[in-house]
Amino acid sequence: MIQGSKFISAGQGPEAAERLPDEGAAEVTGEAELRAFTIAAALHGERLDRALAELVPEFSRSYLQQLVDAGAVRLNGAVASRPAHRVRAGDTGQIELRPTPQSQAFRPEPMALDVVFEDPHLLVLDKPAGLVVHPAPGHWSGTLLNGLLARDAKALALPRAGIVHRLDKDTSGLMVVARERQTMDALVRLIAAREVSRQYLALAHRPWAGAPVREVDAAIGRDPTNRLRMAVVDLDRQGGKPASTRIELLQDASEGCWVQATLRTGRTHQIRVHMAHLGHPLVADELYGGAPAAGLRRQALHAFRLAFRHPVTGQALEFQSPLPRDLQDALAAWGLRYNRGDRPTSHLPG
Image (tube, rainbow, N blue to C red; front, side):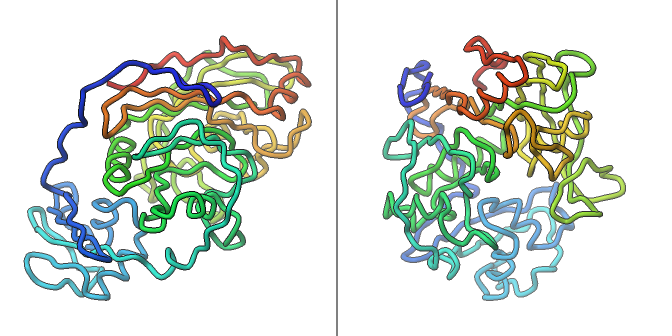
């Protein structure tokens, strides 16, 4: 286990990571990367750009559309020219992944980063609340990505500087970041296969209702009434993706509840949406019905535990982050106490 900046081995897995299958294997050629793909039955009839977004999940769909328009995608031996082309199961192709002008435009910005683990392949860091992970409108600088570019020159050659998952600006806690392309691809696959365990602590409004442990299986999509929000949706009527969260009550108070949430999937704002859906919006999460309370003005969510099997060495790794002072003070304000005994009940996958 790793707690704070101290590393404790959680056991040794296989001596080497499993060899990657041929499909999806990458060939790096100069400034670009050629990646082969085969359309699976589940993608039969999909638009080419949507299929590529599933096959190459580390890039945005808009960027993949640009590659199609630029002639960088071949399908069944011919250049594909239309993002809207409908693919068929068994189609084979190749995509040339090129550095985007946007990725080259971001400037390295030195900043203090709390790195709790690092090796040649990846690093794990403890993100403070208030730090934006990736440049976006309104936050083109001062982000974690800018800091990673300044910390490691190799990050410039990686999509999103090696970032494989995100935390919201006001969520604190642990993140894993790749330092090389093969590791990045492997981490993306681990997350997609639900082989990365991510657990959070949250303070929410209203005393807990219902069973002390609840499995929330509720699809999430864009809120049709507010494009800035996500919402629980009916997939028969609206676009979205399945989402699953295990939520466990740790302590209760007259003002609200202290819970632990384990992600089964990784949808945008998933814990925030599911907690609001249960009638327990997070403290200070005004986007989803919460309000400032207990001295908190940022959403009361902390990614306190991260566990996965190292994609290169096979070593089982577990990390824990201390609870930030603002959340400790908020608990105390409601007569609750953070216990080191608040520990996850689920274990490292595999």
